[in-house]
Length: 290
Ligand code: G1P
Image 1 (spheres, rainbow, N blue to C red):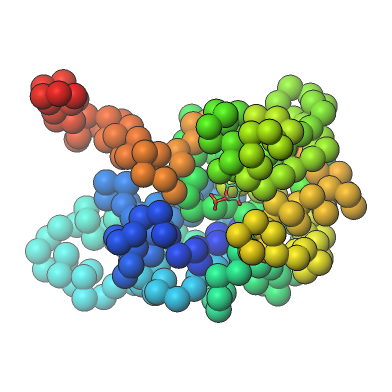
Image 2 (spheres, rainbow, N blue to C red):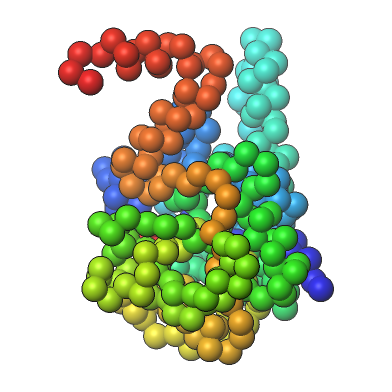
């Protein structure tokens, strides 16, 4: 069985939900306190054992490349001012993983973005991690949970969780037959259905393990919702060719792609930090009209 060694992080989206902030700044660089969103996802990949990462970028995404590069001027400044802890934090970022960048010239959809990684991935299974989803797991990272299942099943696996009715139309929604606790053999998947069309209330979140056959499926997938090549539509095609599984992962997911989810992530992460917890709790407790 081939091990998962490579991960794809699509980061070419326009970030319209966070305009105007994202007019001149990639949404992936929005910070959760002092760490940009994309770093959480990269750390999850690395902590899952993935050391080869392909970021699919687009126009206006240079800040991502700069962020993961070395920064001699800044490092010299931190040495001169003896800020060694910050220096280590800055240097660690540049040595996190082997990161490659591929540009998607036009934003033609998530499916198209993943297809851009085909040459680099070659003929082996790989992971896809979407930057909008931040997933905190107490022990095993979500991607590693999927990789462990892939080792047993040998088929593509996507992470899912229960979504509230009013959010159904924001997700890819699946129908599946449970094969063991929390594992489903996929029988249907629809991108952003209405509540009436939805085959269940189980939605896909942004973590996937794919066999390389997904690339052929994407190539044959016509534009779907929003006139974009949807990854979900390619997964439906894959499901007709091979077994595909869904897994209700263990962990808490923040949808940092929307404003409420983003703010929840900031608050929870602040409350987890010894240097911030007391001050934030006290602020929330004493705030008028809260
Ligand atoms: C994308 C996918 C959708 C999935 C979601 C998870 O949608 O197209 O199938 O459920 O990510 O976050 P987006 O959030 O980019 O609109």
